[in-house]
Amino acid sequence: MIFVIQFVAPLVLIAALISVALLSRNEKSTDRFTWKLPLCVIAGASILLLSLIVLSADAPLFYLFVIAPILCLVFLVLLVAAVIRRKPRQSLSMLLALVAFLAASGMLTKNHGRLRPSLRWLLWSRHYKAQVLQQPATANGELKHIEWDGWGGAPVGDWTEYLVFDPADSLSAAASNRSSGKFGGIPCNVALVRRLESHWYSVQLEVNEWWDRCKLRP
Image (cartoon, helix red, strand yellow):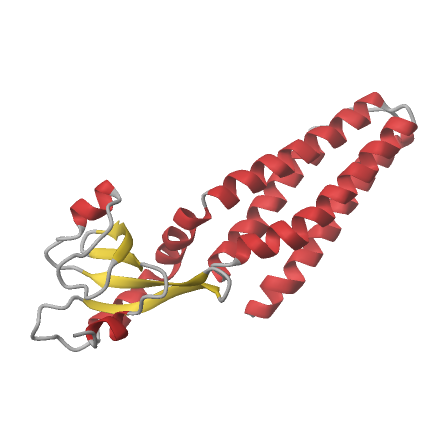
């Protein structure tokens, strides 16, 4: 299922957007301006990128380096063709579609770090809560947690994010202030804390830090 959404769905959506663009270009062979193309582009690009963001923390790279260049090239070719055919209204439609695509893609890509945890929590919070609450209690005050997300690799380092259950909401101030450092119940250095709901937080550790390894340090 994930393979279908991550690889097949982008191809289907690209084909659909190209079809809409061609239909708008050829509609009655007249020079007409239509809002249909820009609106379809915004909707399609947003749905696709949000789906990829939910499925993978590295989705923006796949989107920016694979999908976005293909669609930009298609719209540029159609725009140039409309200009050559002296269709100013169609040219405007194509130009607005390209601008709409870039704007929607840029906005969602820029905010993917906030959108991904929020969307995953919205969709699957019950499942994640059950996983965390199944963890055994610790005697040293360590907060219950599970590894929740991760991204990066050799060139930039590995980043790991944990879902943490904090019954006292001791992480509330850190989430509000977007502060980093050491916090009670977490053995590692923390880069960022996000509040998902009362008592539940996503905790991003510093690069190349892992919860279990931090506990082994003297």
